[in-house]
Amino acid sequence: MKKWLIGVLAGAVLLQVGMAYATKTETIVKAENKADFAAVVSAVQSQMVPGGRYGFVDKKEREDVNQGLGYMQNLFDKYGTVAGMDQKTQMDLFNHQEAVNAILTRRDSNRLVCESVAPMGSHIPRKTCRTYGEIEQEHQNTRQLMDNFKNVPQFKSGH
Image 1 (cartoon, rainbow, N blue to C red):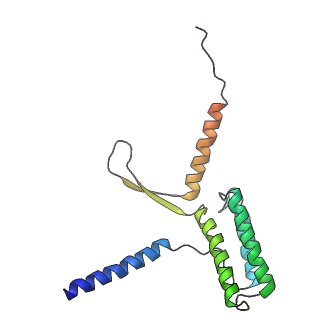
Image 2 (cartoon, one colour; image 1 turned 180 degrees about the vertical axis):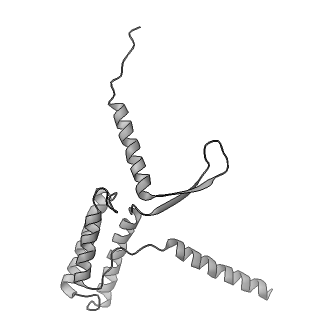
Image 3 (cartoon, rainbow, N blue to C red; image 1 turned 30 degrees about the vertical axis):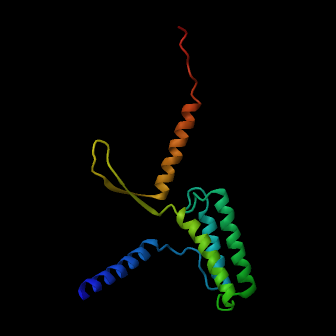
């Protein structure tokens, strides 16, 4: 019974570690001082253009990212460094960083998305992985193709 209990506890710990690993995201916006933050802002904004790493950020998300970056810039303008901030301000900075990072991570063209799909003619699913950018580009190409078909003149038979 004791071995069984130890096994259950070890399994629960491993499950929690696995869940934490699966939910871990890359930190994109993070800086310790005003100069570093300015460089991060510049890099992010240069990549939020069509074809950039965050080029699929939509208008509302872009506004949210820019608002969050502006808010954080104000904190760095006032305090200079994270070390110079009080605990409440540091927590506020962290929460804004997390909100911006969540948007950028979700719209990251390099993010790998995997799914289990059964190929045509088969019932056996296979794991396929593509980048978010590839998936979004395919969606844009399909929309463009559909729009092109809508603009083709339709000929009616005169019978």
